Image: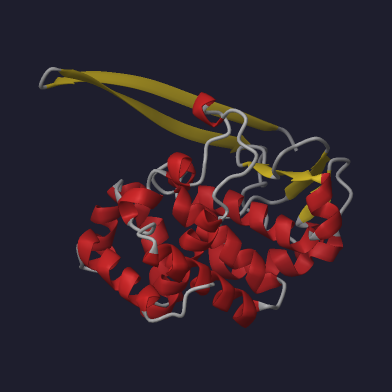
Length: 266
């Protein structure tokens, strides 16, 4: 299959007060050969290696992705094993999972599910999930989704909420904090982080605790509506107002209350 990726970038500038504000508006259109978009994703060939060989061992991941994301999936995910990488990554434009060799050896199902969830989330939210403002949702959901696959759900949820509750006690949980993901988690491309040997891995648990809070409070269908609304609302607060009919401060208060009744991790 031949794919042509067309990216139209339009830069608009206007003056607001004394500052010059630039908006980068990306209109992303992916053209594929006739019939490819209409083709349903086949669970047996959903994941392929870089030589296009099917990886049927991951069929369950594909079924779980289809159950949540529906048509917001590529026809196939290509799995490439990388060496020397610091982390596993994903390419949403090519639907490629760049999996660190160590991760693939130690936890193949978990890491494949995690990175594939990122790609489908990017498609569902028209790329908004990859922005700094919404990465806590993206990483939180991918972490949640991967651990739903590996069947230790109750144990993992307990661990996540205990860690997040501890972070809450340390005043390290708020929308203001998590919406600056590069600072909250750590940005490998930021010169200020040069030489850092570790990152804030608890950030993933904080993000995942928001997903658990949302699911326990509003349910899966409302979570889907919320995610689909993000690119249309453009901000977290506007999306809360549109879908939940509640302002951002109130949702934050409910999230923190959800964590406050949990015994923190010691």
